[in-house]
Image 1 (cartoon, rainbow, N blue to C red):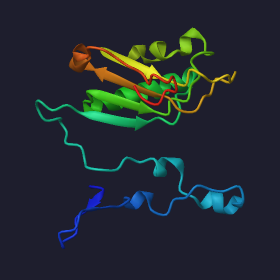
Image 2 (spheres, one colour):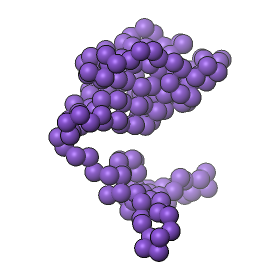
Image 3 (cartoon, rainbow, N blue to C red):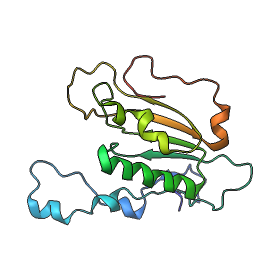
Length: 172
């Protein structure tokens, strides 16, 4: 389903939210427990929306996927999360994977939790990850961060990689 509605009067299309997202709201501090329990669950709020993907991927097409992972988990749960992402990438035949909200403070995480170590399981890839380099926090969780992976044959096409020059991890 497309996220656009065309008006018959020749006016420009109007952006609309899909039915699965309508009516959701972020609870405030004043929200009581019963109201919080009545909210749709996280899985329902994070369902994909937009045009349906054509499977199998058409020949000579490049498929991009932008995925807000809402934080790269650590330890066993992190490995399971990466395995799930790899399975989806294979199923959908993704060529370029954009990742937002990495939410990790790589400056203080141990070597086995670094970006390059965690994505080692991806077959044939070129990747770049950027997070805030100026944070003085000593917590392993650091909001934000972006990453991009070129997968399969696309990985051979990478001539260079760049990051946000301000060191804030806003783009790669």
